[in-house]
Image (cartoon, rainbow, N blue to C red; front, side):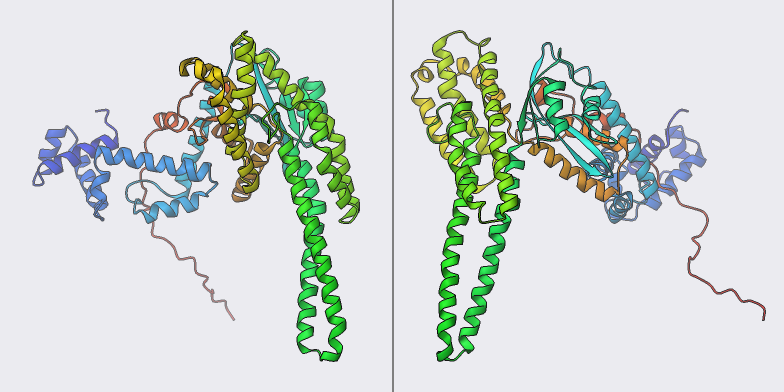
Length: 533
């Protein structure tokens, strides 16, 4: 009879539940299982009935839930979280499951390998669904991270979809192009911009390889100012505070005749503190002004902002930072300000390229000039500032973006065309606005976040293989979800994909059974053998 062990145990358990006084012979006759097997399964069931919840695992529902638990723990904590098999084994032993499933570290490692193989098979099967009928417009971010060999990462910034993620010997243009050419073809992808830290290989990759605009990473530009000027200001503030505390403590123990010099020094330090506080405030306001200016819309008026406008609005905060660079970390600060000046034309071209993309992609939706004007001046600013509000975490910037969103929304509602068009007529333009606004990217923060995640897993696993890196890439694209419940693949390609974990669960077999060694455990204590004298 072709019945596996699990099904036989279920039959024996059902008979025991129906009538506890059934003999082994009666159970064997009713189930069609040999008496010797019934006796063995009955003893195994009795051995497993050690805890109050043990009866649950003998039922079909309990067996299925236990299978879901084990595979879910290995998937979420073992693969995605980098938790070792020994810790997972301890976890299952704490749940008192050692008599029900094989939860040794070696058994869990085998299951983890099987799940990884299923994940790779899932990614291969979904490649056909990752095709578009026409070229898709994308904005790519590229950077590298180092764990021994560099890992080159290329992400579509609007959706967060990882195109390539692989270990390489170096990070030259030839190596980058070898990775990018594996997925990039002009018939499927219309790359409009590549955001990077300005490395020569990446700039060449954008211009010569992808044929798009090279956009300097605003995050790296702001970090350059913070690392030099911001650090110098913070260091001087700390030194002044220590000097003031020292003078005040000395004034408590100094005679009135000798206190005049200390009072004068304290006043001088207080004056320096006031100047330093003023410079620090100018520094912070200038950084915020730079961040708030690099947008396709004016933060205060809500009007569209082109590349030439950007050139004008960036000069005042940069002039203040240039003045401060004469005092604080002069060499490093001046280099950071000079880098900003050199990158302004590239930032302006990035804004200009996005507006060209907007006009080009809006034309197929409508040729009505009034509707186009309504979309560009009323709908688009509201959607854009709403997205910026959702993305930013800095309190001051978030407050400014919220105010801009509210003002843009009021202008949108006050527009005559908003009152004329129905919700059904507005929906296609709203969907388009959400898509095109997500394509304006000025930082490679998604790549930096990915590097941080890989760094934590690399440390936890003490390195990972190419197979593990491939598995993590597939999980990122098809499993990780944003607050709206969409995955990166769904956001990029515009249609849902089968649930990754549910697909894996359907193809996984039964859980391993517990094994008990017949040999008694040998003590590992050190014994001193006697030697002849």
